[in-house]
Figure (spheres, rainbow, N blue to C red):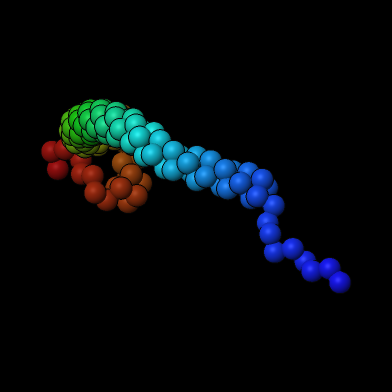
Length: 140
């Protein structure tokens, strides 16, 4: 019976060891290289973050300025509208007074016309007084 050999094939083991060492060195190199790259990317991210903060600040200031301008314009429009409403209400009051004066003049003209009709038609005077009791003949 043949015994299995306990000897290893040295050339294969030696080659595998070399590969293991090379892989380990590559992994170690990646660990050493990556922090530098990540440090560089972190610095660039910090720079871009500062740029983003500046952009945000400028945008914020512009937004506040535009909002202030819009609010000022709205306040201006409110005052303008209020002044126009005051003018219109004063015109309406003036027109109301004019209408009341015109009603008074209309009543005076109607009374005068009614009295002039009475003078023109004395035969209808009796019928007129019974239908229009509020008017009296002048001089009586």
